[in-house]
Image 1 (cartoon, rainbow, N blue to C red):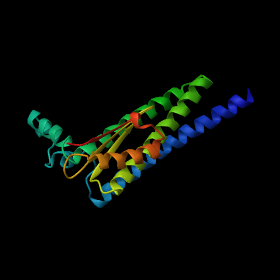
Image 2: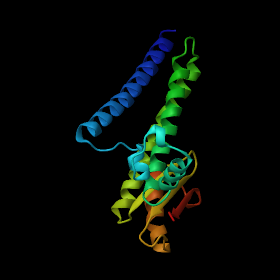
Image 3: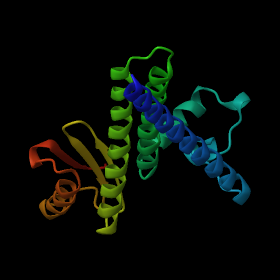
Image 4: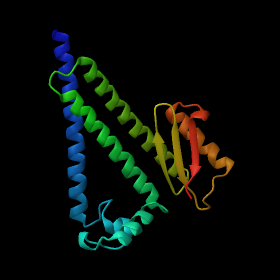
Length: 189
């Protein structure tokens, strides 16, 4: 009984710390962007290149913004944002499940493990993206799953040579431990 109490306390403390870290990251990142006058990702000025307000956002503006998000380097920013929003949503659900009154110990353990897995995916993806761009590629985004990973790379030509694929494959294999058949590498068009 005492060991269950300790374990529940540790899990609850971890969840509170993760929540606090997410909140502080959001708060200080938003404040820093506002203080420097820079735009925050997701604002219409960044996405579409023109300022629009809620009253003038008709179907033409929405179509323009959607097209602008998924072309060129904006694809990479949009993909990273979508990936992070999905992870944040999953973590939020896991935290809610773990914080419910009378939550079973197995639910708490599973929630804690899932949060740790998502955090490790995020770190591994960021490491791969940094290493690939360090090799001279324009941009890169990685999407990691339980047993596979996809890496999308931007090049000047819009194509990847077999040498490019080999470099990126080596980076991905060394960072994830996945075999080559679990890794998908593609060029952004």
